[in-house]
Length: 196
Image (tube, rainbow, N blue to C red):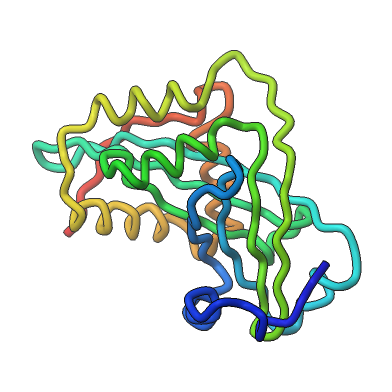
């Protein structure tokens, strides 16, 4: 049930103030459930107050060769109520222990939580992840991490910007990644990219 933000601790209020309506921010694990934060535009407050929310989650796992280095990245996308306007993305550097741990917890593909907020209201919701596949996504990120040779945060940031710039918005990126990094390829792609 949605509540007003004035009951939140200062760190979450600060997070809401600085979130965009495109990014998903990992919050770590609470009660063995990994959580992410999302911000809705003010005009969409009724999503929190007026009905049932559902969410799709899709990872895209990359090894990106750049120069003489190989990066390991997972882009996790979330889409609320099947609507393109509510598509969010988070990027994980799989060579970073904290990023890897957060991503590993999410790709358990059992449950995850969302802290969804507007400037006035918020709610904490938990979603089941019905998942049947011929692979375990955690094995895929482990293989991508093992393949990586670079732990350069600057290169990671540049690669993520390059990936996000492939399409004009997160909804178009969702569709692009579906074709580029499909489920039947374990959501994985190794590619070469040049960026600054």
